[in-house]
Length: 345
Image (tube, rainbow, N blue to C red; front, side, top):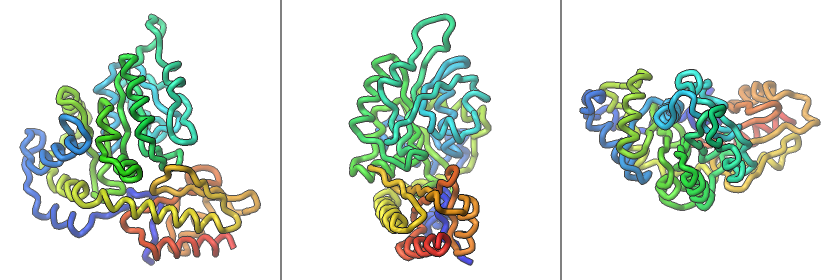
């Protein structure tokens, strides 16, 4: 059976153009800085995101971890949302490997952190307290619905964070989705932060990797930390080649994923037994909660959908998440709605 895989946009496979680019990629030893394809990808990413330099890393989790460790020392504190990917899904790496203390504040329904909450979380100078060094935002915000944070909010947050003498890191795993949603160059959403990580391996379809961007001095620190974490990948231009295709060919088409997610959300909202979370500024994610009258659990619904050829994931008790991407077409959306109707029947 060929499955309609909506579990995540991490399931995307390389496009034909990516396979071709990988097969013909010019490579060198990246630990020596001699892989021309990686160097090109890093330069492209930095220019597009409005920063001086970039660093190719194995994953978004590695990029976020490196960023926190480059900004903070042991015993320092980082402020982030209680729904932040770095807090929820990255295995406590900033604490386990960096000794960095995490101070969480509530994510709002629109994915933002209230500026007054950030301000209140910043520690005063006191021997009893950890030293606040960094704030982390996430755009798009995954657990809040794949929501694109507005440009005005991003600027206000950056001004407030910098006004307090702190650094601002952006977990921009899906930042290109946000840029396409708002119809702005991606650097409009990233140029004001001190560092930003984005994923090549989600909706942009590359098989592996993320890029961390920042100033030249920051990336020099990040490079050393990447080495400490075992992230020097030698002749990895075969991977970076797919990332170059991703940046050149896969960004503008993200609007199609957003459109299909909206169609999917609309179709599912018409079915009895589902309460679809329709939020403003949603991109390629659909969250649907099982209504009280549905006797099946979320796990049972996921299992039943699989028998119908649809793969979905549970995002919480009785909550399902569906993510559109390059390999989901209009027919797949229609079949998914029909599968839900049959399962919930």
